[in-house]
Amino acid sequence: MTPATSPTRRSARSLRRKKRTRRAAGPTARTADRYALYESAVYDPDADLRFLRRVHRKERGAFPLRLREDFAGTSKLSAMWVAKTPEAEAWAVDLDPEPLAWGRERHLEPLGPAAKRVHQIQANVLEVKTPKVDVTTAFNFSYWVFQERRTMLDYFRAVHRYLKPSGMFALDLMGGPGAQSECEEEREEDGFTYVWEQEALDAITNHMRCHIGFRFRDGSRLRRAFTYDWRLWSLPELRDVLMDAGFAQVDAYWEGTDEDGEGNGIFRKRKHAENEETWIAYLVAWKRPTG
Ligand SMILES: C[S@@+](CC[C@H](N)C(=O)[O-])C[C@H]1O[C@@H](n2cnc3c(N)ncnc32)[C@H](O)[C@@H]1O
Image (cartoon, rainbow, N blue to C red; front, side):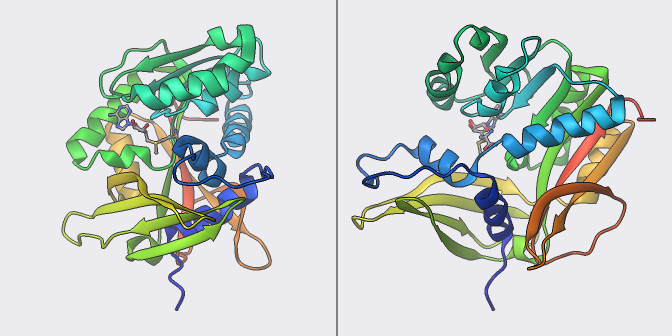
């Protein structure tokens, strides 16, 4: 059986979403930039941006202008948020100065004067103070770094505090039997191979360690270029913690499938869903109930 693990679905989605660029010669482990590889292989926030705007407009009848991007890394979503909307503003929060600096150079500086409307903050999302925003995001499962319920509750409370009354908090998550299986998967990219490794899940704590690595045409590799220590949280657990943190309503958005049974990148609000081998969903938590 091919382990249809979380990255399979994730990869399928990111394959559809990512921008493809052709290179004359591929990178090698010596020349490669791990953030560029990450963004090329797994991260294109275009679809996230469209999702956030669609849901906010549908549920609130207004175009959202203020974003707080938690676990922002290279701050790409924030850059896209302000790029074409002169009134838009974003706060990009991350603990690590390295991806923030990388993103400042690659994503913010090219924006010109609009870059002033992205406020990068090097801080812990548990402690950071920001103005109240329309939308806060925690994407690519980054918030799973919080493995104790108490800490997750503190985080969700902090998000709640800095949301406008009409505001929404969007998170993504994965699940299904495949998300619990040990695996190593590879996918060919333009000029390199993307490798996703998922170590065995601890059945008592739900702790999982995952790695992203890259292999190159010259045989060199960047093994475990990124490592994540996460707890695998279930959807109802997260919904309960969000409600305990003060959110009034939590909606699950489920991905549709194409004729091959692959995720089609279109997420709709659902009350029930089949526990597919591996799935990805968004949760949207509202500070005040929607219509
Ligand atoms: C997987 S990256 C996310 C990058 C990008 N936003 C994405 O969705 O792909 C996770 C990021 O979370 C940051 N991070 C981890 N714990 C954090 C915390 N407590 N507060 C702020 N940032 C944190 C790390 O420094 C890292 O840049």
